[in-house]
Image (tube, rainbow, N blue to C red; front, side, top):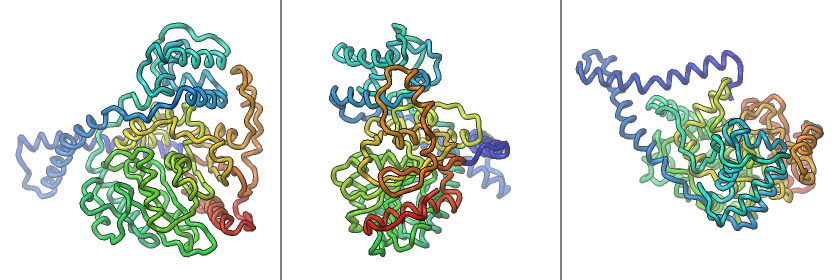
Length: 509
Protein backbone atom coordinates (compact mmCIF):
# COMPACT_ATOMS: atom_id res chain seq x y z
CA UNK A 1 0.00 0.00 0.00
CA UNK A 2 1.14 3.49 -0.88
CA UNK A 3 0.75 5.17 2.52
CA UNK A 4 -1.33 8.09 3.75
CA UNK A 5 0.86 11.19 3.25
CA UNK A 6 -0.28 14.26 1.31
CA UNK A 7 2.27 13.51 -1.38
CA UNK A 8 0.97 9.95 -1.73
CA UNK A 9 -2.59 11.30 -1.96
CA UNK A 10 -1.71 13.75 -4.73
CA UNK A 11 0.20 11.08 -6.63
CA UNK A 12 -2.51 8.42 -6.48
CA UNK A 13 -5.31 10.87 -7.32
CA UNK A 14 -3.29 12.16 -10.27
CA UNK A 15 -2.78 8.61 -11.56
CA UNK A 16 -6.49 7.89 -11.23
CA UNK A 17 -7.55 11.07 -13.04
CA UNK A 18 -5.06 10.35 -15.82
CA UNK A 19 -6.28 6.79 -16.32
CA UNK A 20 -9.94 7.79 -16.15
CA UNK A 21 -9.44 10.45 -18.82
CA UNK A 22 -7.89 8.15 -21.42
CA UNK A 23 -11.09 6.61 -22.78
CA UNK A 24 -13.30 9.76 -23.00
CA UNK A 25 -10.45 11.69 -24.63
CA UNK A 26 -9.87 8.80 -27.03
CA UNK A 27 -13.54 8.73 -28.03
CA UNK A 28 -13.48 12.49 -28.64
CA UNK A 29 -10.33 12.16 -30.72
CA UNK A 30 -11.81 9.27 -32.70
CA UNK A 31 -15.00 11.23 -33.37
CA UNK A 32 -12.95 14.23 -34.50
CA UNK A 33 -10.86 12.05 -36.79
CA UNK A 34 -14.02 10.60 -38.32
CA UNK A 35 -15.00 14.11 -39.35
CA UNK A 36 -11.64 15.61 -40.35
CA UNK A 37 -9.91 12.47 -41.59
CA UNK A 38 -6.50 11.08 -40.56
CA UNK A 39 -3.60 13.48 -40.10
CA UNK A 40 -0.54 13.54 -42.35
CA UNK A 41 1.65 14.15 -39.31
CA UNK A 42 3.06 10.75 -38.21
CA UNK A 43 2.92 11.54 -34.49
CA UNK A 44 -0.67 12.76 -34.65
CA UNK A 45 -1.63 9.84 -36.88
CA UNK A 46 -0.22 7.41 -34.31
CA UNK A 47 -2.29 9.16 -31.63
CA UNK A 48 -5.41 8.88 -33.81
CA UNK A 49 -4.80 5.16 -34.37
CA UNK A 50 -4.41 4.63 -30.63
CA UNK A 51 -7.60 6.60 -29.96
CA UNK A 52 -9.45 4.41 -32.47
CA UNK A 53 -8.13 1.27 -30.75
CA UNK A 54 -9.22 2.60 -27.34
CA UNK A 55 -12.70 3.36 -28.71
CA UNK A 56 -13.09 -0.09 -30.29
CA UNK A 57 -11.84 -1.72 -27.09
CA UNK A 58 -14.42 0.19 -25.04
CA UNK A 59 -17.37 -0.59 -27.32
CA UNK A 60 -16.64 -4.18 -28.26
CA UNK A 61 -14.79 -5.52 -25.19
CA UNK A 62 -15.63 -3.51 -22.08
CA UNK A 63 -19.37 -2.94 -22.53
CA UNK A 64 -20.26 -6.55 -23.49
CA UNK A 65 -18.04 -7.93 -20.70
CA UNK A 66 -19.60 -5.58 -18.15
CA UNK A 67 -23.04 -6.96 -19.02
CA UNK A 68 -21.76 -10.54 -19.00
CA UNK A 69 -20.31 -10.20 -15.52
CA UNK A 70 -23.71 -9.25 -14.07
CA UNK A 71 -25.18 -12.73 -14.50
CA UNK A 72 -26.40 -14.29 -11.23
CA UNK A 73 -24.06 -16.18 -8.94
CA UNK A 74 -24.23 -19.95 -8.69
CA UNK A 75 -24.52 -20.42 -4.94
CA UNK A 76 -23.13 -23.46 -3.14
CA UNK A 77 -25.40 -26.19 -1.83
CA UNK A 78 -27.39 -25.04 1.20
CA UNK A 79 -26.32 -26.19 4.63
CA UNK A 80 -28.84 -28.07 6.73
CA UNK A 81 -30.81 -26.00 9.22
CA UNK A 82 -28.83 -27.53 12.08
CA UNK A 83 -25.56 -26.54 10.44
CA UNK A 84 -26.84 -23.03 9.72
CA UNK A 85 -27.88 -22.55 13.32
CA UNK A 86 -24.50 -23.78 14.53
CA UNK A 87 -22.79 -21.39 12.11
CA UNK A 88 -24.93 -18.52 13.41
CA UNK A 89 -24.03 -19.41 16.98
CA UNK A 90 -20.30 -19.41 16.20
CA UNK A 91 -20.64 -16.03 14.51
CA UNK A 92 -22.62 -14.57 17.39
CA UNK A 93 -19.93 -15.54 19.91
CA UNK A 94 -17.36 -13.29 18.23
CA UNK A 95 -19.45 -10.17 17.60
CA UNK A 96 -18.17 -7.67 20.16
CA UNK A 97 -20.01 -4.57 18.88
CA UNK A 98 -23.41 -5.64 17.53
CA UNK A 99 -24.62 -2.15 16.55
CA UNK A 100 -21.46 -1.50 14.55
CA UNK A 101 -21.83 -4.98 13.08
CA UNK A 102 -25.31 -4.13 11.76
CA UNK A 103 -24.49 -0.61 10.61
CA UNK A 104 -21.53 -1.76 8.50
CA UNK A 105 -23.39 -4.70 6.98
CA UNK A 106 -26.10 -2.17 6.09
CA UNK A 107 -23.59 0.11 4.34
CA UNK A 108 -23.47 2.73 7.10
CA UNK A 109 -27.24 3.23 7.33
CA UNK A 110 -28.68 4.93 10.44
CA UNK A 111 -29.30 2.28 13.08
CA UNK A 112 -32.96 3.35 13.41
CA UNK A 113 -33.53 2.39 9.75
CA UNK A 114 -32.38 -1.19 10.40
CA UNK A 115 -35.58 -2.88 11.45
CA UNK A 116 -36.62 -6.47 12.03
CA UNK A 117 -37.47 -7.32 8.42
CA UNK A 118 -34.22 -5.74 7.25
CA UNK A 119 -32.31 -8.00 9.61
CA UNK A 120 -34.25 -11.07 8.48
CA UNK A 121 -33.57 -10.22 4.84
CA UNK A 122 -29.85 -9.93 5.58
CA UNK A 123 -29.78 -13.28 7.37
CA UNK A 124 -31.78 -14.83 4.53
CA UNK A 125 -28.87 -14.03 2.23
CA UNK A 126 -26.13 -14.77 4.75
CA UNK A 127 -27.35 -18.18 5.87
CA UNK A 128 -29.88 -19.36 3.26
CA UNK A 129 -28.18 -17.91 0.13
CA UNK A 130 -31.49 -16.43 -1.03
CA UNK A 131 -33.01 -13.08 -1.89
CA UNK A 132 -36.34 -13.73 -0.14
CA UNK A 133 -37.82 -16.23 2.26
CA UNK A 134 -41.06 -18.17 2.48
CA UNK A 135 -43.22 -19.34 5.37
CA UNK A 136 -41.05 -22.43 5.79
CA UNK A 137 -38.05 -20.23 6.63
CA UNK A 138 -39.76 -17.71 8.89
CA UNK A 139 -39.30 -19.61 12.13
CA UNK A 140 -35.56 -19.93 11.57
CA UNK A 141 -35.12 -16.28 10.62
CA UNK A 142 -37.24 -15.15 13.54
CA UNK A 143 -34.86 -17.09 15.78
CA UNK A 144 -31.88 -15.25 14.32
CA UNK A 145 -33.67 -11.91 14.80
CA UNK A 146 -34.47 -12.80 18.43
CA UNK A 147 -30.80 -13.68 19.03
CA UNK A 148 -29.77 -10.35 17.49
CA UNK A 149 -32.10 -8.50 19.88
CA UNK A 150 -30.41 -10.31 22.75
CA UNK A 151 -26.99 -9.20 21.48
CA UNK A 152 -28.18 -5.61 21.12
CA UNK A 153 -29.86 -5.58 24.48
CA UNK A 154 -33.01 -4.09 22.95
CA UNK A 155 -35.88 -4.90 20.62
CA UNK A 156 -35.67 -4.41 16.88
CA UNK A 157 -38.41 -2.19 15.54
CA UNK A 158 -41.00 -4.17 13.58
CA UNK A 159 -41.36 -3.74 9.82
CA UNK A 160 -38.82 -2.55 7.30
CA UNK A 161 -36.65 0.57 7.25
CA UNK A 162 -34.83 2.26 4.39
CA UNK A 163 -31.53 0.47 5.09
CA UNK A 164 -30.16 -1.81 2.38
CA UNK A 165 -27.86 -4.64 3.40
CA UNK A 166 -24.62 -5.50 1.65
CA UNK A 167 -25.38 -8.87 0.06
CA UNK A 168 -22.37 -9.49 -2.13
CA UNK A 169 -23.53 -12.44 -4.21
CA UNK A 170 -26.95 -10.87 -4.89
CA UNK A 171 -25.97 -7.24 -5.41
CA UNK A 172 -24.94 -5.75 -8.73
CA UNK A 173 -21.30 -6.31 -9.61
CA UNK A 174 -19.84 -2.85 -9.12
CA UNK A 175 -16.87 -1.78 -11.21
CA UNK A 176 -15.25 1.55 -11.98
CA UNK A 177 -15.10 3.45 -15.19
CA UNK A 178 -13.59 1.63 -18.12
CA UNK A 179 -10.02 0.33 -17.87
CA UNK A 180 -8.25 1.58 -20.96
CA UNK A 181 -5.86 -0.19 -23.29
CA UNK A 182 -3.18 2.04 -21.78
CA UNK A 183 -3.88 0.50 -18.37
CA UNK A 184 -3.58 -3.03 -19.75
CA UNK A 185 -0.39 -2.02 -21.55
CA UNK A 186 1.02 -1.03 -18.16
CA UNK A 187 -0.10 -4.37 -16.70
CA UNK A 188 1.61 -6.19 -19.57
CA UNK A 189 4.86 -4.31 -19.00
CA UNK A 190 4.83 -5.10 -15.26
CA UNK A 191 4.01 -8.75 -16.02
CA UNK A 192 6.96 -8.95 -18.41
CA UNK A 193 9.34 -7.39 -15.88
CA UNK A 194 8.08 -9.80 -13.23
CA UNK A 195 8.65 -12.74 -15.55
CA UNK A 196 12.20 -11.62 -16.34
CA UNK A 197 12.97 -11.43 -12.62
CA UNK A 198 11.31 -14.75 -11.80
CA UNK A 199 13.18 -16.58 -14.57
CA UNK A 200 16.40 -16.16 -12.57
CA UNK A 201 15.16 -18.73 -10.05
CA UNK A 202 11.95 -20.31 -11.35
CA UNK A 203 10.49 -22.15 -14.32
CA UNK A 204 7.16 -20.95 -15.68
CA UNK A 205 4.46 -23.58 -16.22
CA UNK A 206 2.19 -22.32 -18.97
CA UNK A 207 -1.28 -23.03 -20.28
CA UNK A 208 -1.70 -24.97 -23.54
CA UNK A 209 -0.85 -22.88 -26.60
CA UNK A 210 -4.50 -22.90 -27.68
CA UNK A 211 -5.34 -20.88 -24.55
CA UNK A 212 -2.94 -18.06 -25.40
CA UNK A 213 -5.81 -15.64 -26.08
CA UNK A 214 -7.69 -16.45 -22.83
CA UNK A 215 -5.62 -14.01 -20.77
CA UNK A 216 -5.27 -10.33 -21.68
CA UNK A 217 -2.78 -8.65 -21.74
CA UNK A 218 -1.28 -11.52 -23.73
CA UNK A 219 1.74 -13.24 -22.20
CA UNK A 220 4.50 -13.94 -24.74
CA UNK A 221 6.25 -16.13 -22.17
CA UNK A 222 3.57 -18.75 -22.80
CA UNK A 223 4.94 -19.25 -26.31
CA UNK A 224 8.48 -19.94 -25.15
CA UNK A 225 8.11 -21.95 -21.95
CA UNK A 226 8.75 -25.68 -22.30
CA UNK A 227 6.89 -26.47 -19.06
CA UNK A 228 3.12 -26.91 -18.96
CA UNK A 229 0.69 -26.80 -16.06
CA UNK A 230 -1.41 -29.92 -15.43
CA UNK A 231 -4.32 -27.62 -14.59
CA UNK A 232 -6.82 -26.16 -17.02
CA UNK A 233 -6.52 -22.51 -15.98
CA UNK A 234 -3.95 -22.13 -13.16
CA UNK A 235 -0.42 -21.24 -14.22
CA UNK A 236 2.47 -21.21 -11.77
CA UNK A 237 6.20 -20.74 -11.21
CA UNK A 238 8.25 -23.64 -9.88
CA UNK A 239 11.67 -23.84 -8.25
CA UNK A 240 13.17 -27.29 -7.86
CA UNK A 241 13.22 -28.71 -4.33
CA UNK A 242 16.78 -29.84 -3.56
CA UNK A 243 16.80 -30.04 0.22
CA UNK A 244 16.64 -33.38 2.02
CA UNK A 245 16.02 -31.70 5.38
CA UNK A 246 13.29 -29.17 4.53
CA UNK A 247 9.79 -29.25 3.13
CA UNK A 248 8.91 -27.29 -0.03
CA UNK A 249 6.60 -24.25 -0.04
CA UNK A 250 3.31 -23.67 -1.87
CA UNK A 251 2.59 -19.94 -2.15
CA UNK A 252 -0.73 -18.29 -3.10
CA UNK A 253 -0.80 -14.54 -3.73
CA UNK A 254 -3.54 -12.00 -3.03
CA UNK A 255 -5.50 -9.48 -5.08
CA UNK A 256 -3.19 -7.24 -7.04
CA UNK A 257 -0.85 -7.23 -9.99
CA UNK A 258 0.02 -10.92 -9.82
CA UNK A 259 3.36 -11.99 -8.35
CA UNK A 260 5.08 -8.63 -8.86
CA UNK A 261 5.00 -7.58 -5.14
CA UNK A 262 6.30 -10.98 -4.05
CA UNK A 263 9.40 -11.44 -6.24
CA UNK A 264 11.89 -10.48 -3.51
CA UNK A 265 10.03 -12.46 -0.88
CA UNK A 266 10.01 -15.65 -2.96
CA UNK A 267 13.63 -15.31 -4.06
CA UNK A 268 14.85 -14.83 -0.48
CA UNK A 269 13.55 -18.21 0.70
CA UNK A 270 16.48 -20.64 1.03
CA UNK A 271 17.48 -21.60 -2.50
CA UNK A 272 17.46 -25.33 -1.71
CA UNK A 273 13.80 -25.18 -0.66
CA UNK A 274 11.40 -25.85 -3.51
CA UNK A 275 8.69 -23.29 -4.20
CA UNK A 276 5.50 -23.37 -6.24
CA UNK A 277 3.96 -19.91 -6.64
CA UNK A 278 0.46 -20.08 -8.11
CA UNK A 279 -0.90 -17.37 -10.39
CA UNK A 280 -4.55 -16.47 -9.78
CA UNK A 281 -5.30 -14.48 -12.93
CA UNK A 282 -8.95 -13.45 -12.19
CA UNK A 283 -7.71 -11.32 -9.25
CA UNK A 284 -4.58 -10.06 -11.02
CA UNK A 285 -6.09 -7.17 -13.04
CA UNK A 286 -6.39 -9.26 -16.22
CA UNK A 287 -9.24 -9.93 -18.61
CA UNK A 288 -9.62 -13.67 -18.34
CA UNK A 289 -12.01 -16.45 -17.35
CA UNK A 290 -14.05 -16.37 -14.16
CA UNK A 291 -12.48 -17.39 -10.86
CA UNK A 292 -12.70 -21.12 -10.22
CA UNK A 293 -15.19 -22.51 -7.75
CA UNK A 294 -13.80 -24.12 -4.60
CA UNK A 295 -13.64 -27.75 -5.74
CA UNK A 296 -12.25 -26.92 -9.18
CA UNK A 297 -9.44 -24.85 -7.64
CA UNK A 298 -8.59 -27.59 -5.16
CA UNK A 299 -8.39 -30.16 -7.94
CA UNK A 300 -6.01 -27.97 -9.95
CA UNK A 301 -3.76 -27.41 -6.94
CA UNK A 302 -3.77 -31.14 -6.21
CA UNK A 303 -2.74 -31.90 -9.80
CA UNK A 304 0.09 -29.37 -9.59
CA UNK A 305 1.65 -30.68 -6.35
CA UNK A 306 1.30 -34.26 -7.55
CA UNK A 307 3.07 -33.43 -10.80
CA UNK A 308 6.13 -32.46 -8.77
CA UNK A 309 5.89 -35.43 -6.42
CA UNK A 310 5.20 -33.40 -3.31
CA UNK A 311 3.67 -35.46 -0.52
CA UNK A 312 4.12 -32.79 2.15
CA UNK A 313 4.57 -29.02 1.94
CA UNK A 314 4.37 -25.73 3.82
CA UNK A 315 1.33 -23.65 2.83
CA UNK A 316 1.98 -19.90 2.62
CA UNK A 317 -0.56 -17.37 1.37
CA UNK A 318 -1.26 -13.67 1.37
CA UNK A 319 -4.58 -11.82 1.75
CA UNK A 320 -7.10 -13.27 -0.75
CA UNK A 321 -4.83 -16.29 -0.99
CA UNK A 322 -5.97 -17.18 2.54
CA UNK A 323 -9.42 -17.90 1.06
CA UNK A 324 -7.95 -20.53 -1.25
CA UNK A 325 -5.88 -21.78 1.68
CA UNK A 326 -9.09 -22.24 3.67
CA UNK A 327 -10.47 -24.45 0.90
CA UNK A 328 -7.26 -26.49 0.73
CA UNK A 329 -7.21 -27.00 4.51
CA UNK A 330 -10.70 -28.52 4.42
CA UNK A 331 -10.20 -30.65 1.29
CA UNK A 332 -9.97 -34.35 2.06
CA UNK A 333 -7.26 -35.05 -0.54
CA UNK A 334 -5.09 -31.97 0.03
CA UNK A 335 -5.36 -31.31 3.78
CA UNK A 336 -3.24 -34.40 4.69
CA UNK A 337 -0.43 -33.07 2.47
CA UNK A 338 -0.27 -29.68 4.23
CA UNK A 339 2.25 -29.24 7.01
CA UNK A 340 2.63 -25.96 8.91
CA UNK A 341 0.80 -22.90 7.55
CA UNK A 342 1.79 -19.23 7.26
CA UNK A 343 -0.98 -16.70 6.52
CA UNK A 344 0.06 -13.11 5.78
CA UNK A 345 -2.65 -10.42 6.13
CA UNK A 346 -5.34 -13.13 6.04
CA UNK A 347 -8.91 -12.12 5.27
CA UNK A 348 -10.50 -15.47 6.09
CA UNK A 349 -10.63 -15.18 9.91
CA UNK A 350 -13.77 -13.53 11.34
CA UNK A 351 -15.11 -13.17 7.82
CA UNK A 352 -18.66 -12.92 9.18
CA UNK A 353 -17.73 -9.51 10.56
CA UNK A 354 -18.36 -6.72 8.03
CA UNK A 355 -14.87 -5.21 7.93
CA UNK A 356 -13.43 -7.06 4.91
CA UNK A 357 -16.57 -6.83 2.76
CA UNK A 358 -17.35 -3.23 3.75
CA UNK A 359 -13.80 -1.90 3.48
CA UNK A 360 -13.24 -3.54 0.13
CA UNK A 361 -16.53 -2.80 -1.62
CA UNK A 362 -18.50 -0.03 0.18
CA UNK A 363 -16.21 2.38 1.96
CA UNK A 364 -15.88 5.73 0.23
CA UNK A 365 -12.12 6.37 -0.03
CA UNK A 366 -10.57 9.38 1.68
CA UNK A 367 -6.89 8.65 2.25
CA UNK A 368 -4.31 7.76 -0.39
CA UNK A 369 -4.18 4.06 0.44
CA UNK A 370 -7.97 3.86 0.40
CA UNK A 371 -8.10 5.42 -3.08
CA UNK A 372 -5.42 2.97 -4.23
CA UNK A 373 -7.41 0.02 -2.91
CA UNK A 374 -10.75 1.27 -4.23
CA UNK A 375 -9.79 2.21 -7.78
CA UNK A 376 -7.00 -0.21 -8.59
CA UNK A 377 -8.32 -3.28 -6.74
CA UNK A 378 -11.95 -3.13 -5.63
CA UNK A 379 -13.25 -1.69 -8.89
CA UNK A 380 -11.28 -3.94 -11.24
CA UNK A 381 -13.67 -6.00 -13.38
CA UNK A 382 -12.17 -9.40 -12.54
CA UNK A 383 -11.69 -8.63 -8.87
CA UNK A 384 -15.20 -7.24 -8.51
CA UNK A 385 -16.75 -10.23 -10.24
CA UNK A 386 -14.75 -12.60 -8.02
CA UNK A 387 -15.98 -10.86 -4.87
CA UNK A 388 -19.60 -10.46 -5.97
CA UNK A 389 -20.14 -13.78 -7.78
CA UNK A 390 -17.51 -16.21 -6.53
CA UNK A 391 -17.05 -15.20 -2.88
CA UNK A 392 -19.28 -17.17 -0.51
CA UNK A 393 -18.41 -16.18 3.03
CA UNK A 394 -19.72 -19.31 4.75
CA UNK A 395 -17.36 -21.58 2.78
CA UNK A 396 -14.47 -19.08 2.90
CA UNK A 397 -14.40 -18.44 6.65
CA UNK A 398 -11.62 -20.03 8.68
CA UNK A 399 -12.26 -20.74 12.34
CA UNK A 400 -9.62 -21.12 15.01
CA UNK A 401 -10.86 -24.64 15.67
CA UNK A 402 -10.01 -25.53 12.06
CA UNK A 403 -6.31 -24.89 12.61
CA UNK A 404 -5.74 -25.56 16.31
CA UNK A 405 -4.15 -28.92 15.54
CA UNK A 406 -1.65 -27.34 13.13
CA UNK A 407 1.42 -25.20 13.46
CA UNK A 408 0.26 -21.85 12.18
CA UNK A 409 1.81 -18.41 11.96
CA UNK A 410 -0.45 -15.45 11.23
CA UNK A 411 1.18 -12.18 10.15
CA UNK A 412 -0.81 -9.00 10.89
CA UNK A 413 -0.22 -5.27 10.44
CA UNK A 414 -1.47 -2.78 12.99
CA UNK A 415 -2.55 -0.28 10.32
CA UNK A 416 -4.29 -2.69 7.97
CA UNK A 417 -6.98 -0.79 6.02
CA UNK A 418 -8.97 -3.93 5.13
CA UNK A 419 -8.91 -6.28 8.12
CA UNK A 420 -9.67 -5.52 11.77
CA UNK A 421 -6.35 -7.05 12.75
CA UNK A 422 -6.73 -6.34 16.46
CA UNK A 423 -9.96 -8.36 16.53
CA UNK A 424 -8.30 -11.18 14.58
CA UNK A 425 -5.25 -11.17 16.83
CA UNK A 426 -7.37 -11.35 19.97
CA UNK A 427 -9.51 -14.09 18.50
CA UNK A 428 -6.51 -16.25 17.66
CA UNK A 429 -4.54 -15.75 20.87
CA UNK A 430 -7.13 -15.37 23.63
CA UNK A 431 -9.05 -18.26 25.20
CA UNK A 432 -12.57 -18.63 23.88
CA UNK A 433 -14.87 -16.71 26.27
CA UNK A 434 -18.37 -17.88 27.12
CA UNK A 435 -20.95 -16.20 24.91
CA UNK A 436 -21.85 -12.89 26.61
CA UNK A 437 -25.52 -12.29 27.27
CA UNK A 438 -25.55 -8.69 26.05
CA UNK A 439 -23.66 -6.16 24.00
CA UNK A 440 -22.46 -4.47 27.18
CA UNK A 441 -20.73 -7.65 28.33
CA UNK A 442 -19.21 -8.17 24.89
CA UNK A 443 -17.88 -4.64 24.82
CA UNK A 444 -16.47 -5.02 28.30
CA UNK A 445 -14.73 -8.25 27.30
CA UNK A 446 -13.24 -6.60 24.21
CA UNK A 447 -12.07 -3.46 26.01
CA UNK A 448 -10.49 -5.45 28.79
CA UNK A 449 -8.55 -7.76 26.50
CA UNK A 450 -4.85 -8.02 27.26
CA UNK A 451 -2.66 -6.74 24.42
CA UNK A 452 0.40 -8.76 25.43
CA UNK A 453 -0.26 -11.15 22.53
CA UNK A 454 1.18 -8.52 20.19
CA UNK A 455 4.61 -9.04 21.72
CA UNK A 456 4.76 -12.79 22.22
CA UNK A 457 7.86 -14.67 21.16
CA UNK A 458 7.51 -16.93 18.13
CA UNK A 459 7.64 -20.55 19.27
CA UNK A 460 6.88 -22.68 16.22
CA UNK A 461 4.22 -24.53 18.20
CA UNK A 462 0.47 -24.16 17.92
CA UNK A 463 -0.79 -20.77 16.75
CA UNK A 464 1.87 -18.06 16.54
CA UNK A 465 1.37 -14.44 15.63
CA UNK A 466 3.82 -11.95 14.13
CA UNK A 467 2.55 -8.42 14.76
CA UNK A 468 3.86 -5.40 12.84
CA UNK A 469 2.43 -2.34 14.54
CA UNK A 470 3.17 0.22 11.81
CA UNK A 471 2.41 -1.80 8.69
CA UNK A 472 -0.59 -1.53 6.38
CA UNK A 473 -2.02 -4.34 4.29
CA UNK A 474 0.70 -5.92 2.07
CA UNK A 475 3.48 -3.66 3.39
CA UNK A 476 5.17 -6.70 4.94
CA UNK A 477 6.78 -7.29 1.52
CA UNK A 478 8.31 -3.81 1.22
CA UNK A 479 11.16 -4.19 3.72
CA UNK A 480 13.84 -6.90 3.67
CA UNK A 481 13.97 -6.78 7.48
CA UNK A 482 10.23 -7.43 7.80
CA UNK A 483 10.29 -10.12 5.12
CA UNK A 484 13.13 -11.87 6.93
CA UNK A 485 11.05 -12.45 10.05
CA UNK A 486 8.41 -14.21 7.97
CA UNK A 487 10.96 -16.18 5.93
CA UNK A 488 12.72 -17.26 9.12
CA UNK A 489 9.41 -18.69 10.35
CA UNK A 490 8.83 -20.50 7.05
CA UNK A 491 12.32 -22.02 7.04
CA UNK A 492 12.09 -23.01 10.70
CA UNK A 493 8.73 -24.67 10.06
CA UNK A 494 10.18 -26.47 7.06
CA UNK A 495 13.13 -27.80 9.05
CA UNK A 496 11.04 -28.58 12.11
CA UNK A 497 8.73 -30.76 10.07
CA UNK A 498 11.66 -32.95 9.03
CA UNK A 499 13.74 -32.50 12.19
CA UNK A 500 11.52 -31.89 15.25
CA UNK A 501 14.51 -30.84 17.38
CA UNK A 502 15.12 -27.71 15.28
CA UNK A 503 15.01 -24.41 17.14
CA UNK A 504 13.28 -21.19 16.20
CA UNK A 505 15.75 -18.54 17.29
CA UNK A 506 15.51 -16.43 14.16
CA UNK A 507 11.92 -15.22 14.32
CA UNK A 508 11.42 -13.84 17.81
CA UNK A 509 10.46 -10.23 18.42
